[in-house]
Each structure stands twice: as structure tokens, then as C-alpha cells.
Image 1: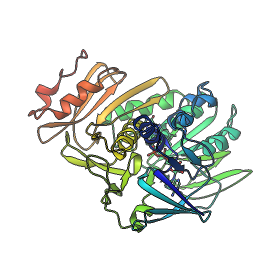
Image 2: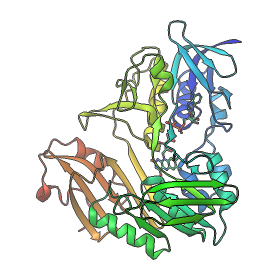
Image 3: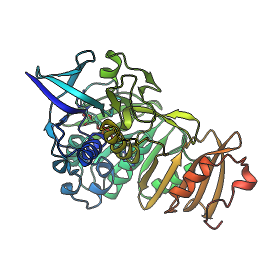
Image 4: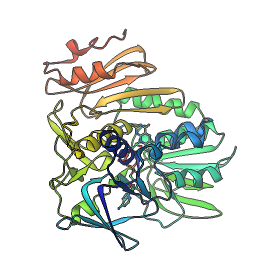
Length: 395
Ligand SMILES: Cc1cc2nc3c(=O)[nH]c(=O)nc-3n(C[C@H](O)[C@H](O)[C@H](O)COP(=O)(O)OP(=O)(O)OC[C@H]3O[C@@H](n4cnc5c(N)ncnc54)[C@H](O)[C@@H]3O)c2cc1C
């Protein structure tokens, strides 16, 4: 069956929902259709690894999509874009003709190559699956020492689970934090009861309803009631790729107005590769702030407004009672300058490259995002001596 709408949004996630609201705010009469592969309406993903394990309520995660007065088709996957006819085909045999199309398809978690039964953590359904296994004393193995792995491991430990964390690097967040901070975080996890096994990879495994066994690179085996993997995501670019849209950094290339190489098609969120003028480079990030702001700007641009996405996204994480916000490129391979009020508990880390500040980590320091953005936009030149103290935290 063929349907027609002014605006078609593929992906009922955070960016898609923000775009729908922005379109509606700009155009009260437009027809908006949203296709979402998940069975659930748009929701916030960050609580899946944080608030919902600390007394947060499920009813608080849903985004207010009703306000956008869009036609939302759930459990419906877009399968192909016919750019010439401006029609998106779905897996139920429908054709959705559009005036403007937004690709807000996010990413799919990378998976372990050992068959079914492992939870590759990304969705509300993954949360429900894990929730069934969580009780005091349950053995939970968490694979991955990045954002998702470290948050889930903390959540499991806080819920009384026997939590084992496995990752190939030396320390939790080792790719992101300077060495001393990464080691301190790792110690902190051990103090909170997490069995942190660094320098370990998973070489084999199997899982079924009765539990899981993992074979580890150090020759040992690990039994668990559930295995959660946080191995990063692969952007969902299949539709864009098959339609011949320009790709970059593994995502869909967009211009400042979030338009792809086809002027009728936009992209936003985890799937979009955008220019970050403050950094002088293209970025693709997987952060809530980027998804919401890019989604909102894309929606406005689709209605013809001049609403470029021209800001650096920030992101945040909570690890037990440690928390941080950050802006720009956090890459532990860059030169890092640390400014602590209390070592590894409160302070700022500046990431320097070629005389510029490329990223700022605000560790238990709040309300400094805009100052950090301004510092990254400042041509400098900066070095270890003159960057210290640039943000107003003691140290
Ligand atoms: C557990 C967890 C915790 C997080 N915590 C933080 C945090 O603390 N801070 C932070 O900044 N960020 C965090 N993030 C990242 C943040 O949630 C993402 O950046 C954000 O969700 C991206 O939004 P999106 O709309 O681009 O993609 P998504 O929210 O992934 O939505 C994309 C949607 O598109 C659907 N889709 C894909 N292909 C198709 C298709 N062909 N047809 C129809 N639908 C399709 C998908 O099923 C999905 O529902 C977290 C993510 C997770 C998973």
C-alpha cells in the first residue's frame, strides 16, 4: 500500500522524536510519519544503564511523541529508499512517499561471534532481558570497558550482583581517560566489589536459558547467569548506502543543515557524520545531546528554516557516585593536562593537540559545558602551562 506524507522519519529513537517535535513546532498542519523498527515508541536510552537501576521509573523514559501528532508505525523497518520516486519501502510491503526524509536510524551493537544468548546492550528489550536476571548474588559478566560496559557493571554491583568485568585494555576507560584517572576508576570499581579482569578477551562461549560459560584468553573459564556485552555500535547506514548517499566515518555525511548528499534527505543522531567547525574536522558521535539537538535542528531545516547544527555536542556518564560531563575529542593518546581539586574525584582534564584544546573532561565539575566549548573554539595557542586554570575550578 502507498502512503504520502510531507515528512517521513525513519527511526523512532531520540533524534527522530526530537525532529518530529521540531517539525510540528514549525508547521502545525504538516503530515509527519515515523517508522520505528523497535516495538516501543521513542524513549531515552541513558536511563537503561543508569536511572532504571537506581530506583528510576520506567514510565519516565518515554519521550512525549504524542505531542508531535505524528503517525507512528512501530515494529516497522524501512528496507529501501527509492530516491527518484521519493518513496521508502518497508518490511510490510508498504511504500511511504515523502516530501522530506530524515534518517535517524542510530546504530546496532557489535555482537560476540558465539551464537545467541548474550545481551548486546542497546534497547529497552535488552533492559527487560537483563532485569529478569538481576537479583542479589546473581553472577553477571560484563564484556567491555567503555561507556556501556562501565555503566552496566556499576549498575549490576549496585544491585548486589556478583559482577565480573572483562576487557582487553589495562584499565576501565583506558582509551578516554589519562592513565592515572583510568587506574583510579578501575581501583574504585574493585573497591565497590566488581571483579575487574583487565587485559582479558573472550575467546569462546555459549549461553542458554540456564546460564552462560565464557572461555577467556588467560585460559580460564567464567560461569555467569547472564552476559552483557558493550562492544560499541555500528551505525545503521544500510539504507543510505544502498541509496548511494555519501558516507563518512562510517556514518551518513551531512552538511551544516544536516542535509545528506540528496537535498530531500537529512540525517541526525548516531548515524550522522557532521562538520564540527570548532574542531576543524568531521565528527560522528554517539551521545544524547547530539541526538536531541541534531534531531531538533534537522526537523527545523526540513521545514525550510535556517537552523544549522553548529555546536559541539557534550556527553556525560555516571559510574557509581562518580560522574562527569565532557565536550570535544576525548582521546587518551592526545596530550592531557590534569587540573585536580581532589585527585581523581573532582577536576578538569584538557586534551591538547597542535596548540589547540580538542576536548575537555569535567570530572564531578558541573555547569562548565559552555566555557569548555568556548575554550575548544579558541585558536590559542595552548600548552600545558597556559591551559591549566582556564576553567574556573580550583587546583
Ligand atoms: C544503555 C545506553 C546508555 C547511554 N547513556 C548515554 C549517556 O549517559 N550519555 C550520552 O550522551 N549518551 C548515552 N547513550 C547514547 C545515546 O542514547 C545515543 O546517542 C542516542 O540514543 C542516539 O539517538 P539516535 O536517535 O541517533 O539513535 P537511537 O536512539 O538508537 O534510535 C534509532 C532507532 O532507529 C531504529 N531503526 C534503525 N534502522 C531502522 C530502519 N531501517 N527502519 C526503522 N527503524 C530503524 C532503531 O531500531 C532505533 O530504535 C547511551 C546509549 C545507550 C544504549
